[in-house]
Image (cartoon, rainbow, N blue to C red; front, side):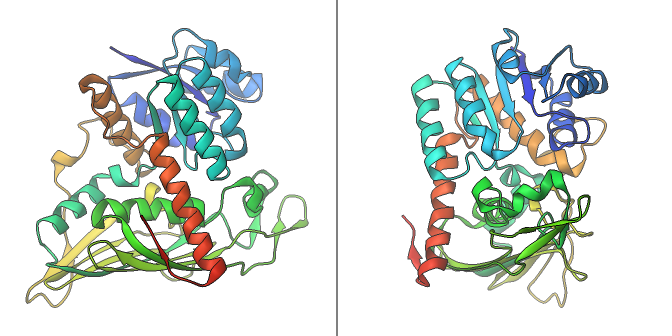
Length: 366
């Protein structure tokens, strides 16, 4: 059965346009049937650009459309709760971008609503679905590095630099729920957990380095209330050490580097450019073991990629594989894709990291 999709927040040039649209076009299980934006003109433009039959400027009309089975919510996080609640009340499946809500209370309410509605959900933590991450997971499981001793990841959370524009100034306000911790860091941790398992303990230091930011298109400055320097350390359940750091903005040096070091070898993932958001990167995998004196490229097996033409952009790879797994879950009655219950667990992890920083004490995770 083809799954009819409606995307709330699919403006031309937005995230959905460079991730969800190409991903869904590549998969035969899905048909994008409706798009909703805040204005009729932008909705009509997006529908023409993407070849979608129905365009709405009211998300309620998209949610109520009979051909829409799966509602994709790709808008600012403060709007998630109302839109997702309406979609669940209508009995529709929901794919929500991460974070699920502005805080764990909203996430808990949405997880409870989804369970009560008895519908399937997806949370957009796609890093663990990337082919390169799945290959790294397999290499580690097969003993490429031996016993894992530790893992270090350093990245740049591009959106939180020294300047912004009016459309994105909200991300500097912690009340909106989109921060370097909740966004860039948690996406990276999702991939780390996929490869190395869950954490047993965590410590943190969350620092607001920039106190204000320039809004370039208005000339105004706004206060920064998010922590734009995120340091998380801890221990995985397998005993390996974690060191993770995300900076707001970008570095003139490397903006993404992840190493996994073990008793027998090392794996290194890097990416070019100024973007350090793992879930949207074209990652280069290298490794060395035994008597190797350096690392060399490790190709990712073709079998781990979806057989699609043309090749998907890096922004759509993880999203497409998440959609493909969800379609398989629906066909086979399995639950391999993270949904809202899992999203709530990740929100609790955010709370734990924040508590570790606030109290200056190591936290033990269940």
